[in-house]
Length: 227
Length: 204
Image 1 (tube, chains in turn blue, orange):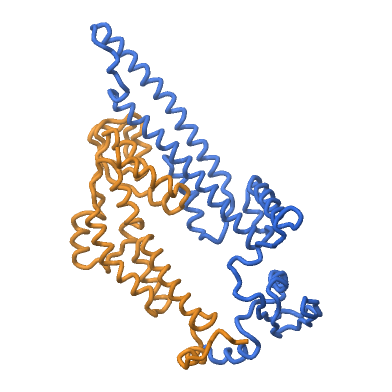
Image 2: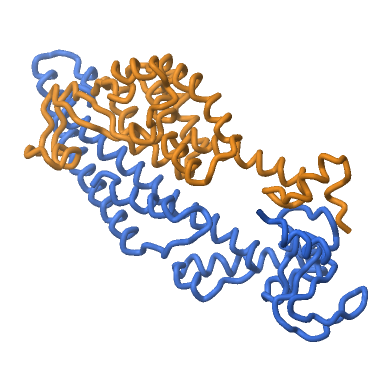
Protein backbone atom coordinates (compact mmCIF):
# COMPACT_ATOMS: atom_id res chain seq x y z
CA UNK A 1 0.00 0.00 0.00
CA UNK A 2 0.86 3.67 -0.31
CA UNK A 3 3.15 3.57 -3.28
CA UNK A 4 4.89 0.31 -2.37
CA UNK A 5 3.74 -1.46 -5.52
CA UNK A 6 4.67 1.39 -7.80
CA UNK A 7 8.09 1.73 -6.24
CA UNK A 8 8.68 -1.96 -6.94
CA UNK A 9 8.19 -1.19 -10.62
CA UNK A 10 10.83 1.51 -10.54
CA UNK A 11 13.18 -0.68 -8.50
CA UNK A 12 12.82 -3.37 -11.15
CA UNK A 13 14.19 -1.00 -13.78
CA UNK A 14 16.87 0.33 -11.51
CA UNK A 15 18.09 -3.14 -10.56
CA UNK A 16 18.21 -4.33 -14.18
CA UNK A 17 20.85 -1.72 -15.05
CA UNK A 18 20.51 1.02 -17.61
CA UNK A 19 21.35 -1.17 -20.62
CA UNK A 20 18.69 -3.81 -20.26
CA UNK A 21 14.95 -3.80 -20.58
CA UNK A 22 13.04 -6.10 -18.23
CA UNK A 23 9.58 -7.30 -19.36
CA UNK A 24 6.78 -4.78 -19.16
CA UNK A 25 5.04 -5.51 -15.88
CA UNK A 26 1.44 -5.30 -17.01
CA UNK A 27 0.01 -6.88 -13.88
CA UNK A 28 1.83 -4.56 -11.49
CA UNK A 29 0.84 -1.45 -13.45
CA UNK A 30 -2.77 -2.58 -13.30
CA UNK A 31 -2.50 -3.05 -9.53
CA UNK A 32 -1.06 0.43 -9.09
CA UNK A 33 -3.90 1.91 -11.11
CA UNK A 34 -6.33 0.03 -8.92
CA UNK A 35 -4.60 1.41 -5.85
CA UNK A 36 -4.99 4.92 -7.21
CA UNK A 37 -8.69 4.28 -7.77
CA UNK A 38 -8.96 3.09 -4.17
CA UNK A 39 -7.29 6.24 -2.91
CA UNK A 40 -9.58 8.30 -5.06
CA UNK A 41 -12.67 6.57 -3.65
CA UNK A 42 -11.44 7.19 -0.12
CA UNK A 43 -10.80 10.82 -1.01
CA UNK A 44 -14.36 11.25 -2.22
CA UNK A 45 -15.70 9.69 0.93
CA UNK A 46 -13.48 11.85 3.13
CA UNK A 47 -14.40 15.02 1.31
CA UNK A 48 -18.05 14.15 1.86
CA UNK A 49 -17.40 13.72 5.58
CA UNK A 50 -15.41 16.94 5.72
CA UNK A 51 -18.03 19.01 3.93
CA UNK A 52 -20.72 17.58 6.15
CA UNK A 53 -18.76 18.43 9.31
CA UNK A 54 -17.99 21.90 8.04
CA UNK A 55 -21.65 22.51 7.22
CA UNK A 56 -22.73 21.34 10.67
CA UNK A 57 -20.17 23.52 12.42
CA UNK A 58 -21.20 26.54 10.36
CA UNK A 59 -24.87 25.95 11.15
CA UNK A 60 -23.98 25.60 14.82
CA UNK A 61 -22.12 28.91 14.80
CA UNK A 62 -24.90 30.66 12.95
CA UNK A 63 -27.41 29.50 15.54
CA UNK A 64 -25.29 31.11 18.20
CA UNK A 65 -25.12 34.22 16.06
CA UNK A 66 -21.38 34.10 15.43
CA UNK A 67 -19.77 34.64 12.03
CA UNK A 68 -19.52 31.29 10.27
CA UNK A 69 -16.95 32.23 7.63
CA UNK A 70 -14.02 31.39 9.92
CA UNK A 71 -14.61 27.64 9.68
CA UNK A 72 -12.00 25.89 7.58
CA UNK A 73 -11.02 22.31 6.91
CA UNK A 74 -8.02 22.85 9.17
CA UNK A 75 -10.42 22.70 12.12
CA UNK A 76 -10.86 18.98 11.52
CA UNK A 77 -7.27 17.75 11.52
CA UNK A 78 -8.16 14.08 11.76
CA UNK A 79 -9.94 14.00 8.43
CA UNK A 80 -7.78 16.63 6.78
CA UNK A 81 -4.55 14.81 7.53
CA UNK A 82 -5.99 11.56 6.17
CA UNK A 83 -7.14 13.50 3.12
CA UNK A 84 -3.62 14.80 2.56
CA UNK A 85 -2.09 11.37 3.02
CA UNK A 86 -4.35 9.88 0.35
CA UNK A 87 -3.91 12.80 -2.02
CA UNK A 88 -0.13 12.76 -1.72
CA UNK A 89 -0.18 9.02 -2.33
CA UNK A 90 -2.05 9.50 -5.59
CA UNK A 91 0.47 12.09 -6.74
CA UNK A 92 3.30 9.82 -5.71
CA UNK A 93 1.85 6.85 -7.58
CA UNK A 94 1.39 9.00 -10.64
CA UNK A 95 4.98 10.13 -10.53
CA UNK A 96 6.24 6.57 -10.11
CA UNK A 97 4.18 5.30 -13.03
CA UNK A 98 5.33 8.15 -15.25
CA UNK A 99 8.92 7.53 -14.25
CA UNK A 100 8.52 3.87 -15.12
CA UNK A 101 7.09 4.66 -18.55
CA UNK A 102 9.58 7.43 -19.29
CA UNK A 103 12.60 5.36 -18.33
CA UNK A 104 11.41 2.48 -20.51
CA UNK A 105 10.75 4.84 -23.38
CA UNK A 106 14.25 6.28 -23.11
CA UNK A 107 15.73 2.80 -23.19
CA UNK A 108 13.63 1.80 -26.20
CA UNK A 109 14.68 4.98 -27.97
CA UNK A 110 18.29 4.08 -27.30
CA UNK A 111 17.70 0.67 -28.87
CA UNK A 112 16.54 2.37 -32.06
CA UNK A 113 19.81 4.30 -32.25
CA UNK A 114 22.03 1.39 -31.35
CA UNK A 115 20.45 -1.62 -33.03
CA UNK A 116 18.05 -0.05 -35.56
CA UNK A 117 15.45 -2.77 -35.16
CA UNK A 118 14.06 -4.75 -32.27
CA UNK A 119 15.21 -8.30 -31.83
CA UNK A 120 12.55 -10.90 -31.13
CA UNK A 121 13.79 -11.31 -27.55
CA UNK A 122 13.48 -7.62 -26.85
CA UNK A 123 10.10 -7.41 -28.53
CA UNK A 124 8.72 -9.92 -26.07
CA UNK A 125 9.59 -7.59 -23.20
CA UNK A 126 7.66 -4.68 -24.67
CA UNK A 127 4.02 -3.86 -24.26
CA UNK A 128 1.83 -3.38 -27.33
CA UNK A 129 1.83 0.38 -26.88
CA UNK A 130 5.61 0.40 -26.62
CA UNK A 131 6.01 -1.55 -29.86
CA UNK A 132 3.71 0.90 -31.60
CA UNK A 133 5.69 3.78 -30.16
CA UNK A 134 8.92 2.25 -31.37
CA UNK A 135 7.56 1.83 -34.89
CA UNK A 136 6.30 5.40 -35.05
CA UNK A 137 9.55 6.77 -33.69
CA UNK A 138 11.49 4.61 -36.12
CA UNK A 139 9.46 5.97 -39.05
CA UNK A 140 10.00 9.55 -37.92
CA UNK A 141 13.73 9.05 -37.58
CA UNK A 142 14.05 7.26 -40.92
CA UNK A 143 12.03 10.01 -42.58
CA UNK A 144 14.38 12.58 -41.12
CA UNK A 145 17.42 10.71 -42.37
CA UNK A 146 16.12 10.05 -45.91
CA UNK A 147 17.54 12.07 -48.74
CA UNK A 148 14.29 13.39 -50.21
CA UNK A 149 12.47 14.28 -46.99
CA UNK A 150 15.32 14.95 -44.60
CA UNK A 151 19.02 15.41 -44.21
CA UNK A 152 20.11 12.45 -46.31
CA UNK A 153 22.55 11.04 -43.77
CA UNK A 154 22.47 7.98 -41.56
CA UNK A 155 22.74 9.59 -38.16
CA UNK A 156 22.74 6.32 -36.23
CA UNK A 157 26.10 5.29 -37.69
CA UNK A 158 28.28 7.04 -35.16
CA UNK A 159 27.17 7.56 -31.63
CA UNK A 160 30.27 9.58 -30.95
CA UNK A 161 32.05 11.52 -33.70
CA UNK A 162 34.63 9.24 -35.34
CA UNK A 163 38.23 10.39 -35.27
CA UNK A 164 39.00 8.74 -38.56
CA UNK A 165 36.81 7.96 -41.60
CA UNK A 166 38.60 4.64 -41.96
CA UNK A 167 39.08 1.86 -39.46
CA UNK A 168 40.86 -1.42 -38.92
CA UNK A 169 38.63 -4.46 -38.86
CA UNK A 170 39.27 -8.12 -38.28
CA UNK A 171 37.29 -10.70 -40.25
CA UNK A 172 35.42 -13.15 -38.03
CA UNK A 173 34.15 -15.51 -40.72
CA UNK A 174 34.72 -16.08 -44.43
CA UNK A 175 32.48 -13.81 -46.45
CA UNK A 176 33.89 -13.93 -49.95
CA UNK A 177 34.69 -10.91 -52.07
CA UNK A 178 33.03 -7.61 -51.25
CA UNK A 179 33.20 -4.44 -53.32
CA UNK A 180 34.11 -1.33 -51.36
CA UNK A 181 34.49 2.22 -52.60
CA UNK A 182 38.28 1.87 -52.81
CA UNK A 183 38.22 -1.53 -54.51
CA UNK A 184 37.09 -5.04 -53.77
CA UNK A 185 38.41 -7.04 -50.85
CA UNK A 186 38.32 -10.75 -50.13
CA UNK A 187 37.12 -11.15 -46.55
CA UNK A 188 38.91 -14.21 -45.25
CA UNK A 189 38.57 -15.32 -41.65
CA UNK A 190 41.32 -13.99 -39.40
CA UNK A 191 42.63 -11.37 -41.80
CA UNK A 192 42.73 -7.67 -40.94
CA UNK A 193 41.71 -4.86 -43.28
CA UNK A 194 41.67 -1.10 -43.35
CA UNK A 195 38.20 -0.08 -44.56
CA UNK A 196 35.98 3.01 -44.72
CA UNK A 197 34.02 3.17 -41.48
CA UNK A 198 30.62 3.78 -43.07
CA UNK A 199 30.96 0.75 -45.33
CA UNK A 200 32.37 -1.58 -42.70
CA UNK A 201 29.66 -0.72 -40.18
CA UNK A 202 26.81 -2.83 -41.66
CA UNK A 203 29.15 -5.84 -41.78
CA UNK A 204 30.14 -5.28 -38.16
CA UNK A 205 26.49 -5.32 -37.21
CA UNK A 206 26.09 -8.53 -39.15
CA UNK A 207 28.92 -10.06 -37.16
CA UNK A 208 31.23 -10.61 -40.11
CA UNK A 209 33.78 -8.04 -39.02
CA UNK A 210 34.83 -6.75 -35.66
CA UNK A 211 36.60 -3.47 -35.04
CA UNK A 212 40.26 -3.96 -34.32
CA UNK A 213 42.15 -1.39 -32.31
CA UNK A 214 45.25 -1.50 -34.43
CA UNK A 215 46.71 -2.51 -37.75
CA UNK A 216 47.79 -6.01 -38.76
CA UNK A 217 51.40 -5.84 -37.54
CA UNK A 218 50.46 -4.03 -34.40
CA UNK A 219 47.81 -6.62 -33.61
CA UNK A 220 50.35 -9.38 -34.06
CA UNK A 221 52.89 -7.72 -31.78
CA UNK A 222 50.58 -6.73 -29.00
CA UNK A 223 49.16 -10.21 -28.68
CA UNK A 224 52.50 -11.14 -27.12
CA UNK A 225 52.94 -8.35 -24.68
CA UNK A 226 49.64 -8.53 -22.88
CA UNK A 227 50.66 -9.11 -19.30
CA UNK B 1 7.02 29.38 2.16
CA UNK B 2 10.48 29.54 0.68
CA UNK B 3 11.39 25.96 1.60
CA UNK B 4 8.43 24.61 -0.29
CA UNK B 5 9.32 26.55 -3.40
CA UNK B 6 12.88 25.24 -3.37
CA UNK B 7 11.70 21.71 -2.86
CA UNK B 8 9.17 22.03 -5.64
CA UNK B 9 11.83 23.22 -8.04
CA UNK B 10 14.09 20.35 -7.11
CA UNK B 11 11.39 17.79 -7.65
CA UNK B 12 10.47 19.30 -10.99
CA UNK B 13 14.09 19.17 -12.08
CA UNK B 14 14.49 15.42 -11.77
CA UNK B 15 10.89 14.32 -11.74
CA UNK B 16 11.69 11.30 -13.88
CA UNK B 17 15.01 10.37 -12.30
CA UNK B 18 15.10 6.83 -10.94
CA UNK B 19 17.52 7.71 -8.17
CA UNK B 20 15.54 10.74 -7.03
CA UNK B 21 12.41 8.62 -6.88
CA UNK B 22 14.12 5.88 -4.89
CA UNK B 23 15.78 8.35 -2.53
CA UNK B 24 12.37 9.74 -1.60
CA UNK B 25 11.31 6.30 -0.51
CA UNK B 26 13.58 6.54 2.57
CA UNK B 27 11.63 6.20 5.80
CA UNK B 28 11.93 9.08 8.25
CA UNK B 29 10.81 8.83 11.88
CA UNK B 30 7.99 11.26 12.61
CA UNK B 31 5.36 12.09 15.14
CA UNK B 32 1.78 12.96 14.25
CA UNK B 33 0.73 16.18 15.92
CA UNK B 34 -2.88 15.46 15.20
CA UNK B 35 -4.79 12.25 14.74
CA UNK B 36 -5.49 10.84 11.33
CA UNK B 37 -8.49 8.81 10.37
CA UNK B 38 -8.31 5.44 8.67
CA UNK B 39 -4.70 5.46 7.54
CA UNK B 40 -3.16 3.63 10.52
CA UNK B 41 -2.76 0.21 9.00
CA UNK B 42 -1.63 1.50 5.66
CA UNK B 43 1.20 3.56 7.12
CA UNK B 44 2.33 0.89 9.54
CA UNK B 45 1.09 -2.64 8.77
CA UNK B 46 2.01 -3.85 12.24
CA UNK B 47 -0.31 -1.45 14.01
CA UNK B 48 -3.71 -2.86 14.81
CA UNK B 49 -5.66 0.35 14.80
CA UNK B 50 -7.24 1.92 11.75
CA UNK B 51 -6.83 5.43 13.08
CA UNK B 52 -3.64 7.20 14.02
CA UNK B 53 -3.78 8.84 17.41
CA UNK B 54 -2.37 12.28 18.19
CA UNK B 55 1.32 12.14 19.22
CA UNK B 56 1.66 8.70 17.63
CA UNK B 57 5.08 7.84 16.26
CA UNK B 58 5.37 6.59 12.70
CA UNK B 59 7.92 6.12 9.97
CA UNK B 60 6.83 7.96 6.87
CA UNK B 61 8.50 7.99 3.46
CA UNK B 62 10.22 11.22 2.58
CA UNK B 63 7.76 12.12 -0.18
CA UNK B 64 4.90 12.32 2.28
CA UNK B 65 6.53 14.75 4.71
CA UNK B 66 6.28 18.14 3.03
CA UNK B 67 2.50 18.01 2.52
CA UNK B 68 1.93 17.32 6.22
CA UNK B 69 4.63 19.44 7.84
CA UNK B 70 3.66 22.54 5.87
CA UNK B 71 0.24 22.30 7.54
CA UNK B 72 1.80 21.74 10.94
CA UNK B 73 0.39 18.24 11.29
CA UNK B 74 3.63 16.37 11.64
CA UNK B 75 6.86 16.71 13.57
CA UNK B 76 9.95 15.26 11.93
CA UNK B 77 12.61 13.64 14.07
CA UNK B 78 16.27 13.26 13.20
CA UNK B 79 16.85 9.90 11.51
CA UNK B 80 19.43 7.83 13.36
CA UNK B 81 21.97 8.05 10.52
CA UNK B 82 22.21 11.78 11.16
CA UNK B 83 22.08 11.32 14.92
CA UNK B 84 24.50 11.98 17.75
CA UNK B 85 26.21 8.60 17.45
CA UNK B 86 26.85 9.16 13.78
CA UNK B 87 28.21 12.61 14.54
CA UNK B 88 30.80 11.09 16.85
CA UNK B 89 31.73 8.45 14.30
CA UNK B 90 32.18 11.07 11.59
CA UNK B 91 34.43 13.08 13.87
CA UNK B 92 36.52 10.01 14.58
CA UNK B 93 36.99 9.25 10.89
CA UNK B 94 34.39 9.66 8.20
CA UNK B 95 36.19 7.55 5.65
CA UNK B 96 35.53 4.16 7.21
CA UNK B 97 31.81 4.61 7.74
CA UNK B 98 29.59 2.41 5.58
CA UNK B 99 27.08 4.93 4.28
CA UNK B 100 25.51 2.44 1.86
CA UNK B 101 24.35 0.45 4.84
CA UNK B 102 23.16 3.45 6.91
CA UNK B 103 21.32 5.29 4.18
CA UNK B 104 22.11 4.75 0.48
CA UNK B 105 20.97 8.28 -0.38
CA UNK B 106 22.73 9.99 2.52
CA UNK B 107 23.09 13.39 0.81
CA UNK B 108 19.85 13.50 -1.20
CA UNK B 109 17.80 12.71 1.87
CA UNK B 110 19.60 15.40 3.86
CA UNK B 111 18.94 17.91 1.11
CA UNK B 112 15.26 17.05 0.97
CA UNK B 113 14.97 17.22 4.76
CA UNK B 114 16.66 20.59 4.69
CA UNK B 115 13.99 21.87 2.31
CA UNK B 116 11.13 20.42 4.32
CA UNK B 117 9.40 22.89 6.60
CA UNK B 118 9.94 22.25 10.26
CA UNK B 119 12.35 19.37 9.78
CA UNK B 120 15.57 19.38 11.78
CA UNK B 121 18.53 20.56 9.79
CA UNK B 122 21.47 18.22 9.49
CA UNK B 123 23.45 20.42 7.12
CA UNK B 124 26.59 20.84 9.22
CA UNK B 125 26.95 17.11 9.81
CA UNK B 126 26.46 16.25 6.15
CA UNK B 127 28.84 18.94 4.95
CA UNK B 128 31.59 17.82 7.30
CA UNK B 129 30.99 14.21 6.25
CA UNK B 130 31.33 15.08 2.61
CA UNK B 131 34.38 17.25 3.19
CA UNK B 132 36.31 14.49 4.86
CA UNK B 133 35.23 11.77 2.45
CA UNK B 134 35.49 13.61 -0.87
CA UNK B 135 39.26 13.66 -1.12
CA UNK B 136 39.52 10.02 -0.19
CA UNK B 137 36.95 9.01 -2.81
CA UNK B 138 38.83 10.72 -5.61
CA UNK B 139 42.22 9.42 -4.48
CA UNK B 140 40.93 5.89 -4.29
CA UNK B 141 39.21 6.21 -7.66
CA UNK B 142 42.58 6.97 -9.24
CA UNK B 143 44.49 4.30 -7.39
CA UNK B 144 45.45 1.14 -9.15
CA UNK B 145 43.66 -1.44 -7.05
CA UNK B 146 42.34 -4.79 -8.12
CA UNK B 147 38.70 -4.94 -9.30
CA UNK B 148 37.82 -6.83 -6.13
CA UNK B 149 39.25 -4.10 -3.93
CA UNK B 150 37.50 -1.44 -6.01
CA UNK B 151 34.17 -3.22 -5.53
CA UNK B 152 34.83 -3.36 -1.79
CA UNK B 153 35.51 0.38 -1.64
CA UNK B 154 32.44 1.17 -3.73
CA UNK B 155 30.22 -0.89 -1.44
CA UNK B 156 30.99 1.54 1.41
CA UNK B 157 29.89 4.61 -0.52
CA UNK B 158 26.47 6.16 -0.74
CA UNK B 159 24.84 6.23 -4.17
CA UNK B 160 25.86 9.84 -4.77
CA UNK B 161 29.44 9.12 -3.75
CA UNK B 162 29.56 6.04 -5.95
CA UNK B 163 28.66 8.24 -8.92
CA UNK B 164 31.65 10.49 -8.10
CA UNK B 165 33.86 7.47 -7.62
CA UNK B 166 32.92 6.00 -10.98
CA UNK B 167 33.34 9.35 -12.69
CA UNK B 168 36.86 9.43 -11.25
CA UNK B 169 37.62 6.00 -12.61
CA UNK B 170 36.18 6.87 -16.01
CA UNK B 171 38.43 9.92 -16.19
CA UNK B 172 41.47 7.79 -15.42
CA UNK B 173 40.45 5.33 -18.12
CA UNK B 174 39.99 8.14 -20.62
CA UNK B 175 43.41 9.54 -19.79
CA UNK B 176 45.04 6.15 -20.23
CA UNK B 177 43.22 5.53 -23.48
CA UNK B 178 44.59 8.78 -24.80
CA UNK B 179 48.10 8.06 -23.53
CA UNK B 180 48.33 4.50 -24.69
CA UNK B 181 46.32 4.75 -27.89
CA UNK B 182 43.03 2.94 -27.58
CA UNK B 183 43.65 0.71 -24.60
CA UNK B 184 42.70 1.37 -21.02
CA UNK B 185 45.64 -0.70 -19.84
CA UNK B 186 49.01 -0.09 -21.43
CA UNK B 187 50.87 -2.86 -23.12
CA UNK B 188 54.54 -2.89 -22.37
CA UNK B 189 55.82 -1.70 -25.73
CA UNK B 190 53.28 1.10 -25.89
CA UNK B 191 54.04 2.38 -22.43
CA UNK B 192 57.75 2.33 -23.23
CA UNK B 193 57.26 4.13 -26.48
CA UNK B 194 55.34 6.89 -24.85
CA UNK B 195 58.20 7.54 -22.47
CA UNK B 196 60.57 7.66 -25.43
CA UNK B 197 58.54 10.51 -26.78
CA UNK B 198 57.51 8.69 -29.94
CA UNK B 199 53.88 8.98 -31.04
CA UNK B 200 51.63 6.17 -29.92
CA UNK B 201 48.56 6.87 -31.92
CA UNK B 202 50.16 6.84 -35.36
CA UNK B 203 50.10 3.10 -35.79
CA UNK B 204 49.33 3.34 -39.49
